[in-house]
Image (cartoon, rainbow, N blue to C red; front, side, top):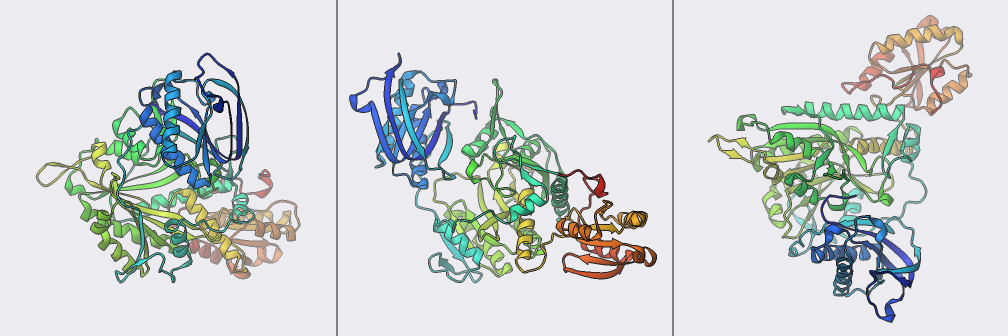
Length: 619
């Protein structure tokens, strides 16, 4: 990863022990005392460091940024001390020896000044070392330090409390009667406690495998691939996210854009700096680019060239945007935390904060409605950029708490950080692993319009920067799939077959002819149902009826019917209804009407594989 401007590369390893010994000096070796020729530490965060050429002249900034991160990481992983180890092999673009030595010494001094035990291996010596890595998910981390100016220290601390629908503010330590999801959010977010470790493989992964949702082993960590059933489900959710946006009472501009933006653009660089080492970046040799974090860059780049009048506000811009976040490899989670994700990103352009708050309520209502359709419920973690942002917007959140008749976990950051947003709600479900998982989100953005040069003409024809709402009503496509699969696991735990909503189930209807002689009738019925906009598969294999029935259940078909002499003659079917776990007598027309009623106005796509099972390859 190279962002095209000064950065120092590091690799952190949390180790049981690290030991080194200097063997032979090189022509650029620093002069050292005898005590520096050997070193050994236990319960240590080992920091392998490569200083690059563009770090020269920025020794203080780079060292300070790195030292602060090392101290934070040491505490987070539970290390007791730090060892700095020069390691030239992380880059081919090395700084001059003098700059390298200066930075290594400065880092050592700055870390020691924080009261941390620290040692440093010498620069420019051939060394042998032995290390024993811990092996937990956070034991191996990489960092790039860009030499940014050190930010002013913030004032005060982060604050958490519970806001009740009646307006009372309750300490998180005194709040005892919240939902399981709320109590888990308080434990993790406010009190910093980790949940009980998950034993064994999470159950939803079995369903990922069933529907062809998996990691791509030939790509970078955290990138998914989807075989036909998974791809169909993915595209249906994407269609649905678009349908939701068009269903909101708002003019919406559908756009398509690139995922790569140049760091030569000041607005892009400034926005990129907000996300630090979670950004993917590409260096072509002449220019440096970042892969977009969400749809923001593309939509804002377009909007800055639009001629907008106050009469046209509010309006939305929407794209299902492939987005990239460099999650730590040990923290990736199939369908939930991925490095490549697809964000159904709606931005609502409003004339001022009051209009933004009004539409914020509209979006919040729809976000709750969408998860309630799945039989789930949300709890709210409401982030504020400052105490002032809370004071200015408390009435908005209180209105939402009253409307939903539920409390909210309030969090605001200390003063001194120049955020581009004021209010951000994370909507969490409690999953089957008893973890609070963020799905939907909405946010008020007061800074990016100015940063990207987006304006509208007000009543006096003066140029004004709008306020912009960011929202993903159903979360990312991947997280919505996660919610569906997690919900199915919950259904299974009640003792009935797990099932998906019919509109997104790849196998909506399965017809199973008793013999080859019944295949024409099965095809005829399939044609009738397909004309109604229903996905119908036909098991034309030479398997026994019992095996076909068993396979239809294994494939989670929403509806399945055997076609024999009786059914062919009468047109009356005995249909297995998965959601009810029983056989129901119905005609062909009533089956079609029932399935169409289940699908409702949700999106429809045909199969992404042959409808005839005998033609399907074994995936």
